[in-house]
Image (cartoon, rainbow, N blue to C red):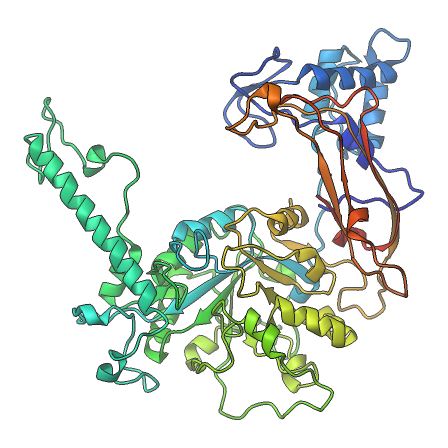
Length: 626
């Protein structure tokens, strides 16, 4: 959650940071246990462990305790309750004893969530249309690493879903035909569709999925070699590889002979054998996985940590026959979850559903099947694509991310019909008819959105108050780096697709934005479709006091006596203020403490103060401290 405060209003952020610490468990702590949590702690629900506070942290908390109790020998229940409610801003205070010694004070603070730096999330208003919310979104979800050579994996979907992602991406390509045995047919393609080239002609060219399919073949070949090595090992041990038994006559499973990490047989191999579609990053060496396996993984994890709707963004590179297979698979695997018909009383031509109308539902984002006719040419004032920026955004491979010169894939009617409340629309301008359809979503590259902000700022912001827009990373981000999503949220963009494979600045901000929100955050006033609302700008005067820390990880190449940690703080607000105000220079958005020694740093009795004074025109919900 963003942690900001209006000027002139007493607020607990600097007190919260100054008086709190995260009590992390350790097996090699230097200090005696003060709190023992039986059965796991209330925050992480990990197995039972001891919670420790360093001497430095204890010293600062003891000063807080002494100040609260005053001249009395112990702290009264009334004073502690008042402090928890007014300073720590705890909505519910649970205290049993009438008087508290220091150790009891620490326990009471801990069990009343007083050591958490994040405020409790308010109950969400779920009565607004879907486009009135920001959505935690993933780009190329299936990849486990970089954009060029990493493996595709179903675990990647499980990972982001359990972390609260509510818009995931699947790039779908043709699977191999079951009767295609030749090594030349590594490209997953089918020739049944009228749009596909004939088989002989196809073999003379490399398709966008050929490299990935060959990567999968390499993984399979490595797997086969490993199987042979295991078999030889078993034979050398004098055991029948088909029915292994140990000295006591017990069966030995194949897993008992494995040493280290094995290369599992890709699910893409099974899918290819059955002719089902594959999931991969076209024109790269990323290894594919089966579309059905992805759908199964999504069903298993989609609603474990969040009951709010999930948007599945389909980037379709498969032919018409394979698209029909995709529809069958989705209806089979997501039965009861998939929105495949409009809700009664919610015509997609008239309005979007409310968030509370789609609990535990999966929405499909896909292009519509359309006739050959296109929208009329935009008026002269419409922004024309800029080759340099458009090209840099177009390398990633999505339908709006591909270079404009590539042939577009036609979408079959049955697949198109699944794009009920979230259908993909190619951006032309904000004046065309399609820009007013409630269910449309514009997917636009990060550079193009910045360009639109410079030339069509009002038009884009007005569009985003009422309709969905999705931002995706530029093509040069082959290392899976990310944008600063807050810059796009402040432009009204609901979905900022990030590479969850990398925990960088962008992902940190995304984690902060959606912490405790289950993947959907209501836009602040002035950003929603209610035309009567105005943006609530405030003036920020932020002061953070850093007192102490504990268990700071020491790099492997250092020892404690040479380890000198410090705290760096960066403010993420609108860089260029409106109405003629001076831009906020980068150096005014960053602060850091002095250096301390060891993994339990203590910044002294007064602490180290990080101050950001008088920053004007700040939208609290869209500004962040990192």
